[in-house]
Image (tube, rainbow, N blue to C red):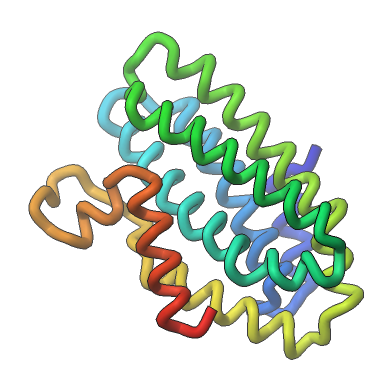
Length: 193
């Protein structure tokens, strides 16, 4: 199983905007986010969960729209479809967690299952998908894809705050995961994804 430290080290060996490096760094941030949710309490726990959801929305949508079409070509259709299916299943679990709420007694059990599934998914990408991208795509192609992903990430709120009710940006950040992914997807389409 991967860990945040090794993902950061692998990302540091690549150009700053390389898609694989960007995704590795996001994997590390996602792993950190799970840890933060697990140890936080009260309103801080909800804030950490919201932050993790926002990161997952950008990450998964960008993978689907930017990385996956290329991975389908270089790693194979079956590989790309397996990763998309894992993300679809994770989105369903995340929707359940959103409805459940961080204070629900069942949340911790379901959250642990969700974390394992996301970790397994990241490990599969790092083992089966990223090497094909590194081997088959030029550095310029990887940089171009990474820049698009970073642009989408910059447009997405990453620090939601519950006191911003009534603000469209705040609603975007703290709204259901599906709404977040739709907005990231729309943003990527506008940018030529």
